[in-house]
Length: 392
Image 1 (tube, rainbow, N blue to C red):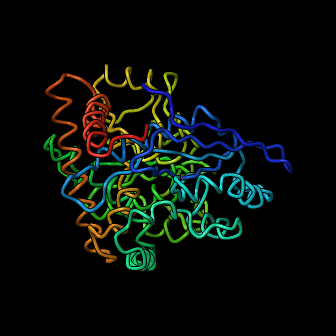
Image 2: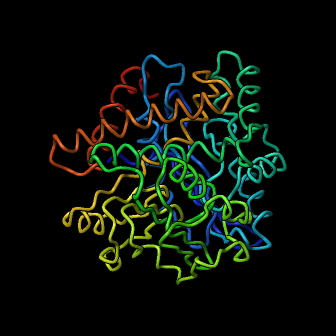
């Protein structure tokens, strides 16, 4: 593994809090990766996420597409997003890294931050856009920006298209795994950790495909119902951080401790919140056959080894949650239009093809889906580097 292209740590002069930026690599002088905010965020965490972004970008490389994957990067701020000082800290961080956003780093929402909040803070920090570094690569900047703005204005049953595409990709990854195993959707149970943008959208798409969501964990605990939760009612009762108003619960719904999602009687687990949620100490609690990583790095390496040894398949984050990032660029570069039907169709087709390829390679190599995804990403990174040689 090569060293990142750039790694920096910033200390806020007002709060003493730290922020981080890691550029894993550049392609055509540009990189892509979201900005997260959480209490306890570290430089090592951001570096791992940046490396993952390089792989997510590469895995969607299609030499015939208009969108050519960018390099990978990630930003992080060590602060609870609910802290009253969080927004001012975000603005100061963006002012500090403004030269990188202007020249090479395209960024957007990630854990703890919404796109609306990033956009507002970016404007206050003096930026044209959080993705302005990619503009010089666009054949028609005005048309591309209008197309992306139109896409962000689309709503489907009360949720924004930008909120839904990532969950659509996660759900399609799960459905592809079920299809490969010959498991019917009806009767398949799902437990999720996290009910924010990614977790909520994933729950919607899986229930509409016929699966049953039997447990959902948020910061207040786990909501469970072995007969299935009313996902749409819970979505309507969320706050901006994905916390469900308990007044929306039905008589058969139960409130359990926060960690109960992991031991739920379900075939599929979807960790869609924090990193390292599944570790060597708690992995044995899981009863599921599949774990789909909707969050970044939710399953620790040693935990994954133990899960693999007992027949649990971990569908890796670099594949499963890559749909949102790819949708941004497919839309901006013009591979798809700003409509929901076209976006969902493209995400489903692309994710199914990618998951099939990764799982087939894992079977052929006798390894895990993560190892297969990393190998495929390295192949594609080499192809991208050959087409667009790095600047010396």
